[in-house]
Image (cartoon, rainbow, N blue to C red; front, side):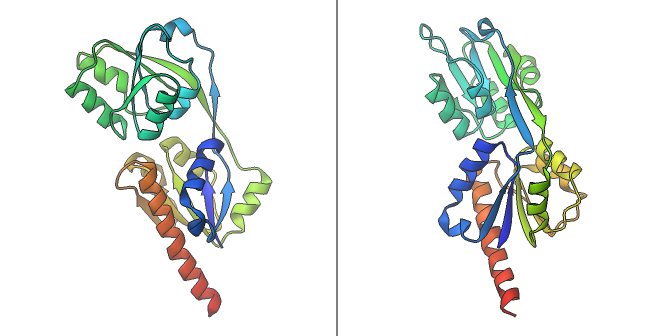
Amino acid sequence: MVGLLMTRPKAAGERFVASLGAACLKHLTVISAPLIQPEPLAIETDVIHGSDVIFTSAQAVEFVPSPSKTKAQRAYCVGEHTTDRAQASGWLAECRGQDADALVASLIQTPPPSGLLHLRGRFGRGDIANRLTAAGIATRECIVYEQRLQGYDHVKRAEIDAQRSLIVPLFSPRTAEQFVNLAPYSADLHLLAFSNAVAEPLMGMKAADLKICTAPTAPVMRDMVRDAALCLARVEGGAEAQ
């Protein structure tokens, strides 16, 4: 069996694993070891009330109050999943791209009717609020959750070290940095990075291969994991047969 190391927060990791399907999972030993733990922060609801907002993660949606019932509030989102979660929470949500750069470009090209509030985690990239404000779209930001780093306990470390080959999809630069910090790994590493920014901390690692998603979307990452799992299952199956 080939190991699949899921470093995303638990709910997101489980959702991604479920998307792989039974045909793929039969080749994999899934190891859940989140390297970041999101924790909500106390915020003043008045800060959000009445504002149109930006969501760059579904996690932020979960950690803020639902929008006003007396005034329609828009949410400009990164990614389809974040957009779906915002819609389910009562926002008039629309997807404006798959990453921060695409969102900023879209909002500059088709500006919103009023200023915006970016609701986000403590750590992020893209400098969205400053870039939009500089382009004439007044944008504030509010940090609504922490992203605390996690390590491996001795049970998870033993599971990881027991693998001959390990597929590791990594979705954020900070998670990738923590993954590197927790080296060494005894398995052959097959690293899959969500974007160039995620790949950057991984460049110096000893790994069998490092591949970068052609687009920063969950379906692209899912297909890459499926391809890696099938390829490694064939290789390891052949090696065992010999």
